[in-house]
Amino acid sequence: MVGIGADIEAMFHQFRVPKNAQDALRFLWWRDGTGNPPVTFQMTRNIVEATDSPCVCFYGLHQCAEDDSTELSATSDSDSEEKLLF
Image (cartoon, rainbow, N blue to C red):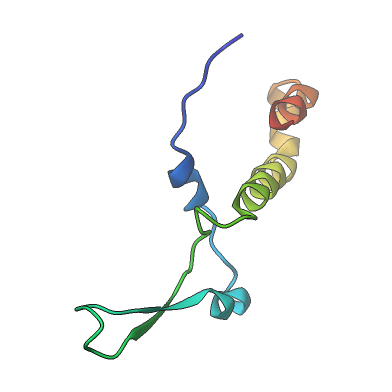
C-alpha cells in the first residue's frame, strides 16, 4: 500500500465553472467595511466549501481518465486506473 499526500483545496480550484453557470455564483463583498456600497463578484472556479464540490471534482477526475483512456490503455492496465478512482 502506498500513502499519497495532496493539496485538496488546490484540486477544487482546478475545475472551472462553465460561463453559463457562473451567474449563480455571484456574491457581494464590502471592501472597506459596511460603510461603502458592496461590490458584486462571481466565482469562476469550483467552490471549496460547497456541498457538491467533492462530487464535481470526482466527476472531473473520472472524465479526464475517460477522455485519456486510449492513451492510458496503450501504456498500462486501464482497469487499474478505474479502480484508483473508486
